Length: 421
Image 1 (cartoon, one colour):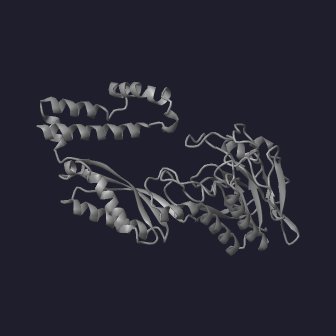
Image 2 (spheres, one colour):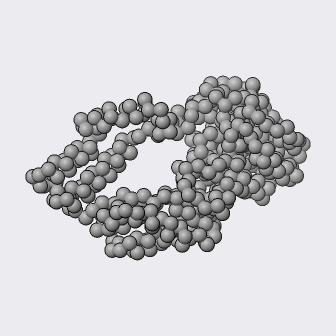
Image 3 (cartoon, helix red, strand yellow):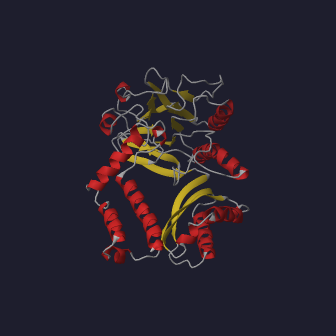
């Protein structure tokens, strides 16, 4: 049976601005601003090197509905490179770049197929004059699409592989808005061999066959909340056989969050050396990519009070940044968080018959999410997450988040109380 090979990518967000990154220097800032486009170029390179039959793009090509001319021209340049090699491109638009948003009128290569937003369309994939697959899709005609679009996909003949392109939120993923919501059951019953999905920025294969249901994830992270490798999928597909799905990293900059236990550090110089060692390890594992790193210092240490005194932490961070500014690829410590505690004996404090032991007991009660302490905290936070005008900027706190805050509050309290004793 004949097979087809294609690249599946989504959520390119070309020309996305930097998000949630503080005090970054200009040279690295420019490298990060270029990273979404460079990642797209890497996808084009992969498609050409692998001599694929086509590239499918499942929405959010651009980061915003205004679609800057700069971003559009860059995108077209990539499609022209594919077209020159005889590689077709199939595109649906998503919530960030819906069809009703502004765009410049440009000429696209003949073998670029952009799906409409008012109906599902099916286009043939042709190789050597023979139709070898059928590719069906529908774009977002406006940003806020909350209806299930899967029922609009028509049934196929079953003679050739069928690929469905859709920008959708499956399984009610709360990290993303519920645009064009659908389910695995919906997709499984729609007669496709492969669902090329977009919208969720984390790569995941929700189902490996009959049909394959795949999110490639975004091709390049744009903020520290999206850590880990990002890229596209190289797929080999034949009707009625399990597809081969290979994830390939395309990102040129990577975001990472890590921690360092400073329990064994005796001086601030030891802490700085530990941070520099961590930077070396991180760069070594990133395969020549730029890195934005968020670090947390943890552990019990005699240095805790010194680190919390005055501007100590504020002075350490620029010192570390300066020591790495001449390295290439670049590494930037975006934040240096402090989660350390003093060297007091927590078990000994628990056994005491005094005010401090009572405080420890209260915090210990928070280890049980069913305790009355938790209910009190939830009531106090309710107003913050429902009534405050700025609540839209806050993520809902899980029990794990609350527990971490409780432990941090305990350590802060004991640092002050034990010191006072």
